[in-house]
Image (cartoon, rainbow, N blue to C red; front, side, top):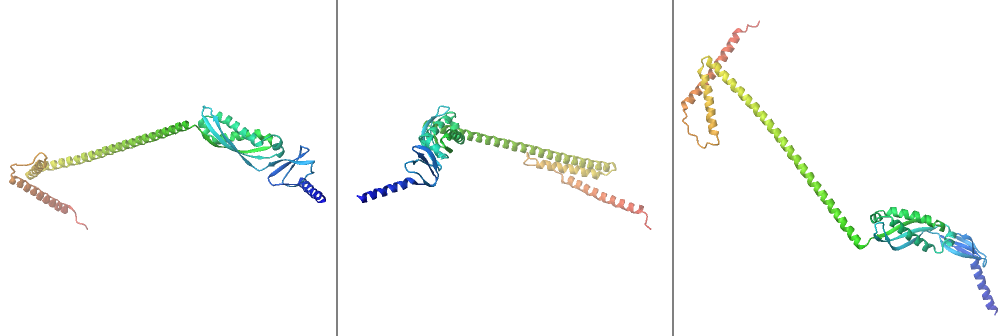
Length: 318
Protein backbone atom coordinates (compact mmCIF):
# COMPACT_ATOMS: atom_id res chain seq x y z
CA UNK A 1 0.00 0.00 0.00
CA UNK A 2 2.81 2.39 0.81
CA UNK A 3 4.45 1.56 -2.51
CA UNK A 4 1.29 2.45 -4.38
CA UNK A 5 1.02 5.77 -2.57
CA UNK A 6 4.66 6.51 -3.32
CA UNK A 7 4.10 5.73 -6.98
CA UNK A 8 1.06 8.02 -7.11
CA UNK A 9 3.05 10.77 -5.41
CA UNK A 10 5.78 10.45 -8.02
CA UNK A 11 3.24 10.65 -10.83
CA UNK A 12 1.66 13.74 -9.32
CA UNK A 13 5.05 15.41 -8.97
CA UNK A 14 5.95 14.61 -12.57
CA UNK A 15 2.64 16.01 -13.83
CA UNK A 16 3.07 19.12 -11.69
CA UNK A 17 6.57 19.67 -13.02
CA UNK A 18 5.27 19.15 -16.55
CA UNK A 19 2.60 21.73 -15.95
CA UNK A 20 5.05 24.06 -14.28
CA UNK A 21 7.89 24.02 -16.80
CA UNK A 22 7.11 24.84 -20.44
CA UNK A 23 9.59 25.08 -23.36
CA UNK A 24 8.35 26.97 -26.43
CA UNK A 25 10.17 25.94 -29.67
CA UNK A 26 11.66 28.47 -32.11
CA UNK A 27 9.14 29.88 -34.58
CA UNK A 28 6.17 29.38 -32.26
CA UNK A 29 4.31 31.40 -29.65
CA UNK A 30 1.93 30.04 -27.02
CA UNK A 31 -0.86 31.91 -25.31
CA UNK A 32 -1.34 31.67 -21.54
CA UNK A 33 -4.84 31.47 -20.07
CA UNK A 34 -5.70 32.07 -16.42
CA UNK A 35 -8.89 30.22 -15.60
CA UNK A 36 -9.73 30.30 -19.34
CA UNK A 37 -8.91 33.98 -19.92
CA UNK A 38 -5.99 35.13 -22.08
CA UNK A 39 -3.34 36.84 -19.98
CA UNK A 40 0.04 36.54 -21.73
CA UNK A 41 2.01 35.17 -24.70
CA UNK A 42 4.97 32.85 -24.31
CA UNK A 43 7.84 33.47 -26.74
CA UNK A 44 10.41 30.77 -27.70
CA UNK A 45 12.40 29.58 -24.65
CA UNK A 46 11.91 28.24 -21.12
CA UNK A 47 8.90 29.39 -19.09
CA UNK A 48 7.25 28.51 -15.73
CA UNK A 49 3.52 28.33 -15.17
CA UNK A 50 1.49 27.84 -11.99
CA UNK A 51 -0.34 24.56 -12.39
CA UNK A 52 -4.14 24.64 -12.28
CA UNK A 53 -4.06 28.44 -12.05
CA UNK A 54 -2.37 28.94 -15.47
CA UNK A 55 -2.56 26.86 -18.60
CA UNK A 56 -1.41 26.95 -22.24
CA UNK A 57 -4.21 28.17 -24.49
CA UNK A 58 -3.24 28.14 -28.23
CA UNK A 59 -0.01 27.21 -29.97
CA UNK A 60 0.50 29.59 -32.88
CA UNK A 61 2.99 29.04 -35.72
CA UNK A 62 4.76 32.36 -36.31
CA UNK A 63 6.64 31.27 -39.45
CA UNK A 64 5.48 32.21 -42.96
CA UNK A 65 2.99 29.67 -44.20
CA UNK A 66 1.45 28.76 -47.55
CA UNK A 67 -2.23 28.17 -48.03
CA UNK A 68 -3.63 26.48 -51.15
CA UNK A 69 -6.75 28.06 -52.64
CA UNK A 70 -8.99 25.38 -54.19
CA UNK A 71 -10.20 25.66 -57.80
CA UNK A 72 -13.49 27.47 -58.40
CA UNK A 73 -15.59 28.64 -61.35
CA UNK A 74 -15.49 32.39 -61.97
CA UNK A 75 -17.58 34.39 -64.46
CA UNK A 76 -15.68 37.20 -66.16
CA UNK A 77 -17.07 40.54 -67.29
CA UNK A 78 -17.79 39.19 -70.79
CA UNK A 79 -19.65 36.14 -69.35
CA UNK A 80 -16.86 33.63 -69.88
CA UNK A 81 -16.62 30.88 -67.24
CA UNK A 82 -13.08 30.04 -66.12
CA UNK A 83 -11.62 27.79 -63.45
CA UNK A 84 -9.20 29.57 -61.11
CA UNK A 85 -6.99 28.36 -58.27
CA UNK A 86 -4.08 29.91 -56.41
CA UNK A 87 -1.83 30.06 -53.36
CA UNK A 88 -1.52 32.52 -50.48
CA UNK A 89 1.56 33.20 -48.37
CA UNK A 90 0.89 34.66 -44.94
CA UNK A 91 2.61 35.13 -41.56
CA UNK A 92 1.16 35.59 -38.07
CA UNK A 93 2.33 38.82 -36.45
CA UNK A 94 0.13 38.84 -33.35
CA UNK A 95 -0.44 35.41 -31.76
CA UNK A 96 -3.25 36.62 -29.46
CA UNK A 97 -5.30 38.09 -32.33
CA UNK A 98 -4.73 35.04 -34.52
CA UNK A 99 -5.88 32.82 -31.65
CA UNK A 100 -8.90 34.75 -30.39
CA UNK A 101 -10.11 37.14 -33.13
CA UNK A 102 -11.07 34.42 -35.63
CA UNK A 103 -12.28 30.89 -34.98
CA UNK A 104 -10.52 29.13 -37.88
CA UNK A 105 -7.74 31.24 -39.36
CA UNK A 106 -6.98 29.08 -42.42
CA UNK A 107 -10.62 28.56 -43.36
CA UNK A 108 -11.39 32.26 -42.96
CA UNK A 109 -8.38 33.25 -45.08
CA UNK A 110 -9.25 30.72 -47.78
CA UNK A 111 -12.85 31.91 -48.12
CA UNK A 112 -11.76 35.55 -48.09
CA UNK A 113 -9.31 34.99 -50.96
CA UNK A 114 -11.82 32.97 -53.01
CA UNK A 115 -14.42 35.71 -52.66
CA UNK A 116 -12.00 38.41 -53.73
CA UNK A 117 -10.86 36.34 -56.71
CA UNK A 118 -14.45 36.24 -57.96
CA UNK A 119 -14.79 39.98 -57.38
CA UNK A 120 -11.58 40.96 -59.19
CA UNK A 121 -11.98 38.62 -62.17
CA UNK A 122 -15.65 39.52 -62.49
CA UNK A 123 -14.63 43.11 -63.28
CA UNK A 124 -12.26 42.06 -66.11
CA UNK A 125 -12.72 40.63 -69.58
CA UNK A 126 -11.34 37.20 -70.40
CA UNK A 127 -8.42 38.64 -72.36
CA UNK A 128 -7.56 40.94 -69.46
CA UNK A 129 -7.88 38.05 -66.98
CA UNK A 130 -5.37 36.02 -68.99
CA UNK A 131 -2.91 38.83 -69.72
CA UNK A 132 -2.97 40.96 -66.56
CA UNK A 133 -1.95 38.32 -64.05
CA UNK A 134 0.38 40.65 -62.12
CA UNK A 135 -2.28 43.33 -61.81
CA UNK A 136 -4.80 40.79 -60.50
CA UNK A 137 -2.32 39.47 -57.93
CA UNK A 138 -1.56 43.00 -56.73
CA UNK A 139 -5.25 43.85 -56.30
CA UNK A 140 -5.92 40.61 -54.44
CA UNK A 141 -2.94 41.18 -52.14
CA UNK A 142 -4.06 44.70 -51.24
CA UNK A 143 -7.66 43.71 -50.48
CA UNK A 144 -6.76 40.53 -48.56
CA UNK A 145 -4.08 42.22 -46.47
CA UNK A 146 -6.45 44.98 -45.39
CA UNK A 147 -9.22 42.48 -44.56
CA UNK A 148 -6.99 40.16 -42.49
CA UNK A 149 -5.22 42.89 -40.52
CA UNK A 150 -7.62 42.55 -37.51
CA UNK A 151 -6.71 38.85 -37.33
CA UNK A 152 -3.07 39.64 -36.57
CA UNK A 153 -1.67 38.19 -39.80
CA UNK A 154 0.20 39.67 -42.77
CA UNK A 155 -0.60 38.49 -46.31
CA UNK A 156 2.77 38.58 -48.07
CA UNK A 157 1.85 37.18 -51.49
CA UNK A 158 -1.21 36.10 -53.47
CA UNK A 159 -0.58 34.15 -56.68
CA UNK A 160 -3.08 32.75 -59.17
CA UNK A 161 -1.71 29.38 -60.24
CA UNK A 162 -3.94 28.62 -63.17
CA UNK A 163 -6.80 30.20 -65.13
CA UNK A 164 -8.53 27.62 -67.34
CA UNK A 165 -11.15 28.77 -69.87
CA UNK A 166 -13.67 26.21 -71.24
CA UNK A 167 -12.43 23.80 -73.90
CA UNK A 168 -14.58 25.24 -76.69
CA UNK A 169 -13.36 28.73 -75.81
CA UNK A 170 -9.75 27.54 -75.91
CA UNK A 171 -10.34 26.04 -79.38
CA UNK A 172 -11.91 29.29 -80.55
CA UNK A 173 -8.97 31.29 -79.23
CA UNK A 174 -6.57 28.93 -80.99
CA UNK A 175 -8.39 29.42 -84.30
CA UNK A 176 -8.42 33.16 -83.79
CA UNK A 177 -4.69 33.18 -83.06
CA UNK A 178 -4.01 31.04 -86.14
CA UNK A 179 -6.06 33.38 -88.32
CA UNK A 180 -4.23 36.38 -86.90
CA UNK A 181 -0.86 34.79 -87.63
CA UNK A 182 -1.91 33.93 -91.17
CA UNK A 183 -3.11 37.50 -91.62
CA UNK A 184 0.25 38.87 -90.45
CA UNK A 185 2.06 36.41 -92.73
CA UNK A 186 -0.02 37.52 -95.74
CA UNK A 187 0.59 41.16 -94.91
CA UNK A 188 4.34 40.57 -94.66
CA UNK A 189 4.33 38.63 -97.94
CA UNK A 190 2.38 41.42 -99.68
CA UNK A 191 4.80 44.00 -98.28
CA UNK A 192 7.71 41.95 -99.57
CA UNK A 193 6.18 41.69 -103.08
CA UNK A 194 5.42 45.41 -103.04
CA UNK A 195 8.97 46.27 -102.02
CA UNK A 196 10.37 43.93 -104.67
CA UNK A 197 8.17 45.54 -107.35
CA UNK A 198 9.27 49.01 -106.25
CA UNK A 199 12.94 48.02 -106.35
CA UNK A 200 12.47 46.41 -109.78
CA UNK A 201 10.76 49.54 -111.12
CA UNK A 202 13.52 51.70 -109.67
CA UNK A 203 16.12 49.51 -111.32
CA UNK A 204 14.37 49.68 -114.68
CA UNK A 205 14.03 53.44 -114.30
CA UNK A 206 17.74 53.82 -113.60
CA UNK A 207 18.51 51.52 -116.52
CA UNK A 208 16.40 53.62 -118.90
CA UNK A 209 17.98 56.81 -117.58
CA UNK A 210 21.49 55.46 -118.01
CA UNK A 211 20.65 54.12 -121.49
CA UNK A 212 19.27 57.52 -122.50
CA UNK A 213 22.35 59.23 -121.10
CA UNK A 214 24.54 56.84 -123.10
CA UNK A 215 22.57 57.43 -126.30
CA UNK A 216 22.75 61.18 -125.69
CA UNK A 217 26.52 61.02 -125.24
CA UNK A 218 26.90 58.79 -128.30
CA UNK A 219 24.80 61.16 -130.40
CA UNK A 220 26.88 64.09 -129.18
CA UNK A 221 30.08 62.26 -130.12
CA UNK A 222 28.69 61.28 -133.50
CA UNK A 223 27.59 64.86 -134.21
CA UNK A 224 31.01 66.10 -133.19
CA UNK A 225 32.66 63.52 -135.46
CA UNK A 226 30.40 64.51 -138.37
CA UNK A 227 31.18 68.16 -137.72
CA UNK A 228 34.91 67.48 -137.80
CA UNK A 229 34.50 65.34 -140.92
CA UNK A 230 32.54 68.11 -142.62
CA UNK A 231 35.22 70.62 -141.62
CA UNK A 232 37.89 68.33 -143.07
CA UNK A 233 35.86 67.91 -146.28
CA UNK A 234 35.42 71.65 -146.53
CA UNK A 235 39.14 72.19 -145.98
CA UNK A 236 39.99 69.61 -148.62
CA UNK A 237 37.55 71.20 -151.08
CA UNK A 238 39.06 74.62 -150.38
CA UNK A 239 42.58 73.31 -150.98
CA UNK A 240 41.51 71.68 -154.25
CA UNK A 241 39.72 74.85 -155.34
CA UNK A 242 42.83 76.92 -154.70
CA UNK A 243 44.93 74.43 -156.66
CA UNK A 244 42.51 74.58 -159.61
CA UNK A 245 42.61 78.36 -159.59
CA UNK A 246 46.39 78.10 -160.01
CA UNK A 247 45.91 75.77 -162.96
CA UNK A 248 46.83 72.54 -161.17
CA UNK A 249 44.66 69.76 -162.70
CA UNK A 250 46.28 66.99 -160.64
CA UNK A 251 44.55 68.29 -157.50
CA UNK A 252 41.19 67.86 -159.22
CA UNK A 253 42.18 64.34 -160.28
CA UNK A 254 43.08 63.56 -156.66
CA UNK A 255 39.74 64.82 -155.39
CA UNK A 256 37.73 62.92 -158.01
CA UNK A 257 39.74 59.72 -157.43
CA UNK A 258 39.13 59.88 -153.67
CA UNK A 259 35.37 60.23 -154.16
CA UNK A 260 35.45 57.44 -156.71
CA UNK A 261 37.15 55.05 -154.30
CA UNK A 262 34.74 55.93 -151.49
CA UNK A 263 31.76 55.27 -153.75
CA UNK A 264 33.14 51.84 -154.71
CA UNK A 265 33.74 50.99 -151.03
CA UNK A 266 30.17 52.01 -150.09
CA UNK A 267 28.72 49.87 -152.86
CA UNK A 268 30.82 46.90 -151.83
CA UNK A 269 29.84 47.18 -148.15
CA UNK A 270 26.11 47.48 -148.84
CA UNK A 271 24.14 44.60 -147.11
CA UNK A 272 21.62 44.46 -149.98
CA UNK A 273 24.27 43.58 -152.54
CA UNK A 274 25.71 40.09 -152.82
CA UNK A 275 27.64 40.59 -156.06
CA UNK A 276 29.12 43.70 -157.70
CA UNK A 277 29.84 43.80 -161.48
CA UNK A 278 30.95 47.19 -162.68
CA UNK A 279 33.17 48.25 -165.55
CA UNK A 280 36.11 49.73 -163.76
CA UNK A 281 38.78 51.49 -165.78
CA UNK A 282 42.04 50.67 -164.06
CA UNK A 283 43.94 53.20 -166.14
CA UNK A 284 41.69 56.00 -164.90
CA UNK A 285 42.32 55.05 -161.30
CA UNK A 286 46.06 54.71 -161.91
CA UNK A 287 46.06 58.09 -163.58
CA UNK A 288 44.36 59.56 -160.61
CA UNK A 289 46.92 57.96 -158.34
CA UNK A 290 49.65 59.39 -160.51
CA UNK A 291 48.03 62.76 -160.06
CA UNK A 292 48.12 62.23 -156.33
CA UNK A 293 51.86 61.50 -156.54
CA UNK A 294 52.44 64.64 -158.64
CA UNK A 295 50.58 66.72 -156.04
CA UNK A 296 52.76 65.31 -153.28
CA UNK A 297 55.95 66.06 -155.29
CA UNK A 298 54.88 69.62 -156.02
CA UNK A 299 53.99 70.17 -152.37
CA UNK A 300 57.43 68.96 -151.31
CA UNK A 301 59.20 71.13 -153.91
CA UNK A 302 57.23 74.16 -152.77
CA UNK A 303 58.16 73.54 -149.19
CA UNK A 304 61.84 73.33 -150.25
CA UNK A 305 61.65 76.61 -152.17
CA UNK A 306 59.98 78.32 -149.25
CA UNK A 307 62.72 77.13 -146.87
CA UNK A 308 65.44 78.39 -149.24
CA UNK A 309 63.80 81.78 -149.55
CA UNK A 310 63.54 82.01 -145.81
CA UNK A 311 67.27 81.28 -145.47
CA UNK A 312 68.20 84.01 -147.97
CA UNK A 313 66.04 86.57 -146.19
CA UNK A 314 67.54 85.84 -142.78
CA UNK A 315 70.51 88.26 -142.07
CA UNK A 316 73.79 86.69 -140.91
CA UNK A 317 74.50 86.91 -137.23
CA UNK A 318 77.56 88.84 -136.02
